[in-house]
Image (cartoon, rainbow, N blue to C red; front, side, top):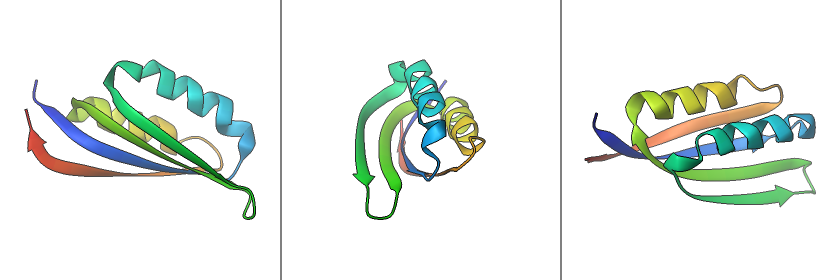
Length: 83
């Protein structure tokens, strides 16, 4: 199956979901290229950016699971690179 490079941007507004979010990211760890997290304490949110290299359906599943968490928003941007 063809692999895609993508970035999943995540905003966590409910810290109670952080443990479940980390569990999901760990589950997809084989596909993660890198991850950057920024706690924005002034606004009470955390901003996370995850770069992935995976099949399209795996990226969609990851983003979907993250988006179902309460108090968590995610958006995915795909590169045109397919390999």
